[in-house]
Amino acid sequence: MEKLLIIDDNSDIRQQLKWGLGDEYTPLLAGDVNEGIALYQKHQPKVVILDLGLPPHEDTSVEGFRGLGELLELNPYVKVIMLTGNSERENALRAMQMGAYDFFPKPPILGELKVVLGRAFHLTNLEEQNRSLQRSLEQKSSESCGMIGQCPEMLSIFSTIKKVASSDVSVFITGENGTGKELVAQAIHEAGLRKKNPFVAINCGAIPENLMESELFGHEKGSFTGAHAMVQGKLQYANKGTLFLDEIGEMPVNLQVKLLRFLQEGVIQRVGGRLDIPVDTRTVCATNVDIVKAIKEGKFREDLYYRISVISIHLPPLRERGDDILLLANYFLRMLNEEYHKKVRRFSSAAVNFLKTYEWPGNVRELRNRIQRAIIMSDANVLEPADLGCESESPAPDEDTDAIPTTSLREARDKVERDMISAAIDRQNGNIVKAAEVLGVSRPTLYDLMKKHNLTPLAATDKTAG
Image (cartoon, rainbow, N blue to C red; front, side, top):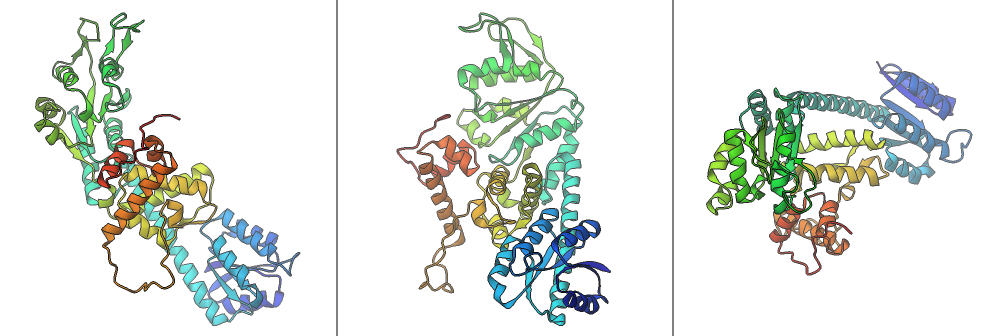
């Protein structure tokens, strides 16, 4: 039988509950908080009945709140049912806000209490099964390639990663910002024959054009002003390993020619040098731009595209991944709880609805950033939409809340998105980099969203510091 801990200083109530519930549960009886905590640590029951007024302060709720706090500290998932007097309703509601499962008036009516207990045990068993299933899914995903996902599109991607990892073919990854393109590249490297050698990542969109050639190929001493010594490029650092070229669509056309030569011949020349240097590296490339359009516009070489895209992998945006959103959210919740030593138990039903219906323009990166910020800033056991950055307005008292909405769900989402972006830019005094950090999206994504919503504030700047 399931163990049930009863903490109450009234011996008559303890005995009444023991006799009334003993056929269905194994009661553990305690007369004060310290005794109750000791029994809990020894037996780990899933459900606890806790009186609010306990010695040495029977006339207040101090000990009851202390007991609730310590129980939830030991196990955020324990279900605590508070026993309250008629005058303690306000304190009972406060206990619910702290994380209590339910409250029950004294003296308890046995039949009604059994119903509440039955629900509590059923819920905690379902939650345990759900957490076990999530850990199993995460473990399977981790074994696959270090990524989390169970939607058909992601399972297909995991299968592709396993197939291509053991070869040296070039892989081309596409997808929106924040979908995990670098994680896919790392997964291919870690599952392949080169995993003991370097994985070198370079973001082509983050390096000034006049420095990119030197960054990739290296330079000889004296090859240009300030070149006081010979420097190896990232290609040479990735020798015997994997080079990940992110945002390759941003690479200047003249450098695309040099990269194509390297891919064809396996040799490089440093800037200012004439010596052919053999380099053996696997190349994985990624972009979030429409590469076919870039080819038509002459911004990307077609022959290079065919060289780097022997295998193509497209990562779906988070909004199209269905139940993966909650799978990832709960994974980040548990991981970040451990990292920051917090005791956030779960998302509220309203927060779950927000997670499932929000468009996620910053994709998985934005999801993680929002949960990270919520866990750091929130003192509650349950995260609400406001903790995740969803600022919703309550309807005015005279509004007809049952009326048919005058706008579509997409229009409402767009309005919330536009208002959040505008507010973030204003709060950061027009600093786009800082606004992007606050919103949990990349700078290019924020520019795309500003364009989408026709946001062109005169104060907006692209400062990288200050």
